[in-house]
Image (cartoon, rainbow, N blue to C red; front, side, top):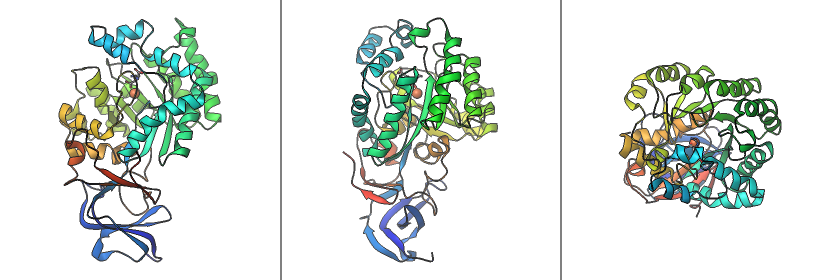
Length: 403
Ligand code: NIG
Ligand code: FE
C-alpha cells in the first residue's frame, strides 16, 4: 500500500470467505475510500490514520439477502390460518387470495404508507448484518403500482445503510382485470410496463414466476426476450411447486439465478452448471408451506452449481425477516453445511445479484462487513433466534447495530 489507510479494523478474528471460511486469527482489515485496501494479520498491518479495536469479535463480509419481496402492504395471517385448517396454497390462490390479496393491499397503499409498512422488516434484516438487499416488485401488476413498489425499494437504499438491487417481477400473478387473458397481460408487460420502468431506471434485473399458478414457459421466455433487448439480467422463480423446465429456460438466457428449485430435474441442474446460474435456495418458503420435497442438493454440489440462501421474505410463503434463520433452516432441513450456508449468504448471494465486489473480504472489495459476538463462524447458522451482530461497516462507515 502506497498511502496510509483511512481506518484499520484491528484485533478481529476474520473470516474472509475468499476460500472456504478464510480464517485469519488476530486479523485486521484496512479501509480506504470505502473499499478494502488490505486484509491480513495484525502484525503485518499497514499504517492507518485511525485504528478501531474490534475487541476480538469475528468479522465477516456483510450479509447479502439476494431474494426478497419485502416491500408490500397488508398481511396474510388469515390465509395461514386457513391453510392450517386444511386449505392449500394453490386453492387459496385460485380463489382470488394469495398473491392477489397482497396486490389489493399494495395497490391501495400510498407510496409513503408502503415505505412505512416495509421499513420495520428491512430494519430487522439489517440488524443481522445485511448490507446488500434484493427487493422485488410483483404486488402491483399494473404500471403505476409496480413503479410505486420499485421507487419505495430505491428509497430504502437512500434512507438506510444498505445497497438495494431492484428486480421487476411483473410476471408474478395474473391481475383480475386480465382474467382468462394471460397472453394479453404478457403483451402489455412486454410492450409497455417493462420498457417504461426500465426507462425510469427502476429495474436492475427481471424475474418471473414460472408455475401452473403463475406463467408458462413460453410466456416467461417472452418476458426474458424483452429483458435481453433492454440489457437487463434475468432470474426465475423456478421449480417451486412443479417441474416446468424453468431452470433450464433461465440458464438458456444466461440467467443470474434460478430460485426455489425443490422440483429441479437433472437436466435443469446440468443447464445451470453450464450457464453458471446460481441456485438460490429458500428454506423459509419450504418450511412455511410444509413442503416435503427437497431441492436436489447432492446433484447441485456434484455439478458445481453455486448455492445461495435467502429469506424470500414475503407475506404468503415466507414471512421471515432473518437471514440467519434462513441459514439455520437450510442446514437443519436440507443438511447444508454451516460453511455452505454462510457462503450462500455472502459470496454466492452476491454472485446471484451479479455483484463481484461484495461477499468476500479482499483488497478492492467494498468495505461492507459485519462484527459478530460468536465462538466460530458456524455459530451464525447454529443459533436460533439469537442475534450476535454487534455492528456493521458499510461503504467504509461504521454503524452500531441497526435496531
Ligand atoms: O417466492 N412463488 C411466488 N412468489 C412468492 C410468494 C409470494 C406470495 O405468496 O405472496 C415466493 O414464494
Ligand atoms: Fe420469491
